[in-house]
Image 1 (tube, rainbow, N blue to C red):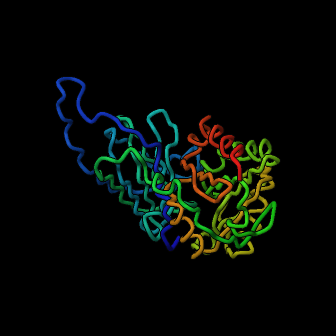
Image 2: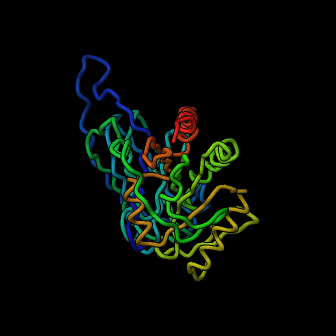
Image 3: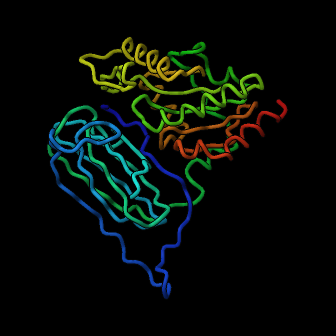
Length: 318
């Protein structure tokens, strides 16, 4: 991408003691890390993306925010972050500006973490990986300031499983607004939850809306291979090929809730308005059009508390 979407993926927010277990001594200050490396075409493949990768293991302290940047030289950088057991915590393509990747990570538990440096596609070349501490993070989370405020309005440019509408036209319904992207494996992992909510609550007044953006507007040339279920690189892209990508993606994953796509300027404004800092991000909006709940990541979407929030909003009077 040639612009910056604010999707610097942030995981669960919590507090964690930042002192050593014995004697209450303060732990040594984290020293910023800089690694210069080379991504080669014959490197081991990233099992999630099937692209060459280099893996760096770093030790991070709990209760701290870290900014992880991957600058690729001659290729479109892609970052993934896992815990030591291999569970994916975050991923990013271009939040570092231009074709560089960036993850902003709120570390809740001290330990070793795996940083996977790879590419969007089959590119290779030299890279610089940096890990910088931004200090302690607040337990309330950035989304807290959205709660209780009017949901920012926007109008979709393209829709599947329904018509392109303005969000304000859905007032009177409970809206589950999910920000996602076709190239986000975490977004794909969350699809069963979206299907479940749509099927269980559509007759009670819930509208599930998946919000994404036109990749071609942002410099990506992506298609979809329905035989493998994989997003692929194509020679040329346009809004027309993006629309076909959305259609084949939705058909493959049996998506039956409303999916909408936004063009560049509208997408940037809407993602910023909703403080999107990770994908998928869920925002629950009540029948009066007020934001009542927000969370980030497919693991958070699987939390039973989300079901409780949806059911609570559905029984509230208009």
